[in-house]
Amino acid sequence: MKRLMITLAASALLASPAIAGDHGHNSGHAKAEGTHASGPVADKVIKAQRKALAKSTKGAGFGPQSPRDIDAAAGKNKRIFSEAPAYTEMNLCNIHFHKNAEHKGGEFTTYAGNGDGHGYQSGYRFDTASLTPAELKPTKHATCDSPHGSVQPGDTIEVHYVHTTAKVKPGPTLGSCLSDAIKNPQLRVETQVYVLVNDKHALSFKNLTKHKKVDGLHQAINIPANTGTAVQYEGSTTGPGYNEKGSPFQVSWSVRPQVAKVNIATVGKWCKGNDFNEDHAHGVRNLVTNKKLLSQIN
Image (cartoon, rainbow, N blue to C red; front, top):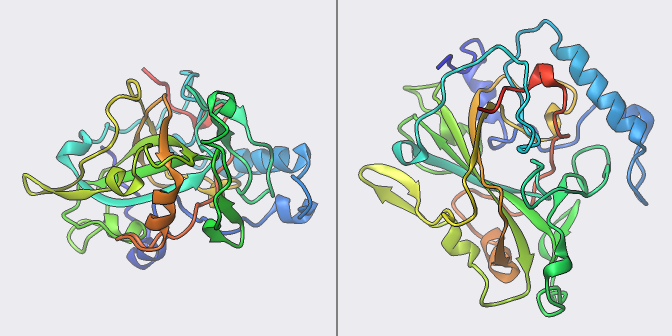
């Protein structure tokens, strides 16, 4: 595999928030056009961000980007790198989640809208028409609350189980995926999309994120195995900080196409304390549609 760009300063890598790049507000056209607290930004804001991404990456040598439509295999990016090993042969280094799916496809194809132009209230959702009124019953207290809002029954989340070939233990931020011995490890993200329900009999997020050492490797031992064959492709880190610039990180992705139900109360408890210092849902990067920035899915 062509390793992560060696020229990146180690200090910058260690400061990077999670594997999803910059989860904070994105600068550029969205700010210039303005955002609206009362509703989503106009289509022209997203169009301008896509144009800026194309301009900033043109001829620069960036590898394939993420997220993408996993049901669309076409891609023209030629900067191909070797697929990372199976996650069972790597160390789990981070777990975090995004409100709404960053990827599109499978059972999460409903567009949530343009959002605020900074990655919040955008992405893709599971169609909740099949959920019962009981599953959608509002909770008494806000769950995983942040300045960008909380999560509620019926919401979709995309969970990233991040793995590395470095000898590390699970922890917060991208820095947990690196070590003093290996600053340019291979990376893999096992991806599962969940829909939050108000049902104590649904899956427990604590159980889904449980991890321990198996044969000397840190492993997330309860990643669902019944949500369809994962779509495998080569891409990058995500997050709204990359809406207008390319991500320099090379990542092998495994995205499961089917959604699983998770008890929202257990997600709330996880946000109150976990090994990754995660307490809220992150924003999403615009879906990458420029075929010059996508790998071919085989």
